[in-house]
Image 1 (cartoon, each protein chain N blue to C red):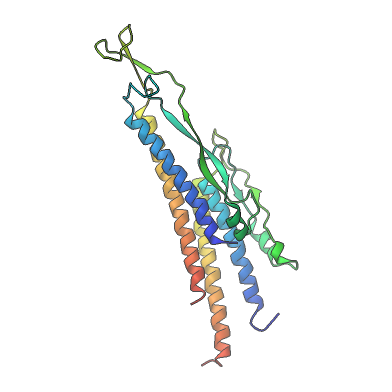
Image 2 (cartoon, each protein chain N blue to C red):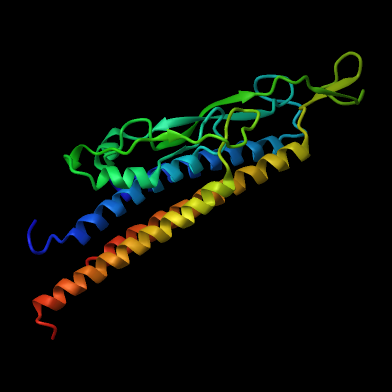
Length: 118
Length: 144
């Protein structure tokens, strides 16, 4: 690990990756809100985050997608909930923003150190 | 993983919902059409949605395994099988020997409900596009 590649940057990068992946699943659920037989997909953020930050070859990382249980199914076999997806979309967006802001703060900190605090 | 791939997923839904709205509007416009090129009254049409694997290239860029993020497309446009509504209009040129004219079985309430559903789903996906756009913008801000 070089001086610039701090553990914080490493962690935040993974955090953004998992957030983006989750966002893609939410977008997919929203796109298929009227598709007969479509089942809501999601991932377990905590366990995927633990996996992503674990010690392994990251290039081959692909989060485990699971079907969400316990949602009300409509007669056409589709169980996408508009409220659930809307809330998750807002949450994921804010989480992503949080990650980006922390990342920028970390870069500012590094730049500050390089410029000797000037 | 790529944020731009998500725009494609939401975009496919926008297209599909727009097509659904078009079919509904066409049903409403032709609610009283008794004559068509195929003969007989207009047949009410319905769209069938189906999940769609997004193009391979963007999937590769996005690092997604097939079958996770899926778009949607209009798989089929089917004709409604319900029988035509017969109205007694003996003077009408399209009347049968008994004096009845066949009109499409279009229920305006049903169509309006479907149209509202399509518009709401469109809005939902437009919100998803806005969210993706905001996230792309934010990640570009890291560079500044």
